[in-house]
Length: 156
Image (cartoon, rainbow, N blue to C red; front, side, top):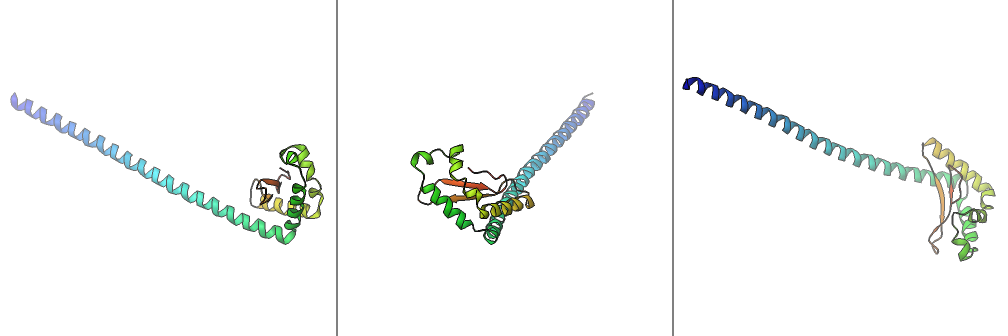
């Protein structure tokens, strides 16, 4: 009987060891797979981010080149800056209001504005971009004083 018990005990121990090896193998494979997945997602996200940054820079260069070939953005910028510098501090503080938009209303009536709007709108549609902006900054005052969206035609 002791021999039967010994054989039974050995077979149970072997079965138990086989189960342990199987469980550890599955756990190891899952761990390696999960780590591989995380590393792959990290590399993919980095490449995707780099692609979007490069696409944005290329689109910006194209918009700049195209807008200067079809319109005179410098004339619009000079007009916007001269209007902005003619505003009082109180009027400058009302950025985004309807009254603020009205100050720049005559800029939107210029031929170059309409040409620039059409060019930027076409560029946005062709490149499947939500918004392309033409913004004017004043180095002396720093804020974004006027932004004409080439896609929605808003003045901010």
